[in-house]
Length: 75
Ligand code: SF4
Image 1 (cartoon, rainbow, N blue to C red):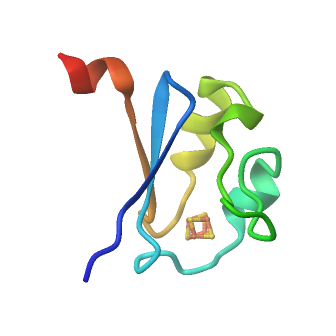
Image 2 (image 1 turned 180 degrees about the horizontal axis):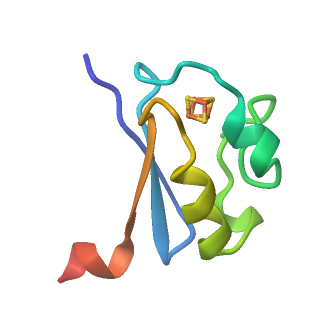
């Protein structure tokens, strides 16, 4: 089963697919204010700006992280 989790700050939604994650640790080294695997939930989108989140999500090497702007969803 393909698990998909959503985490939003109201402006952008982070999408995480745990089955795709290769645990490269890039996300929590790059933006530990948002990505912290010791916490539950491990993604806290209120920890950084939308711009910082988008930049970090784009560095995920596996594609496990993606995002969409919430305005797009309503359009
Ligand atoms: S950067 Fe992507 S692949 Fe690496 S740990 Fe984070 S979600 Fe997983």
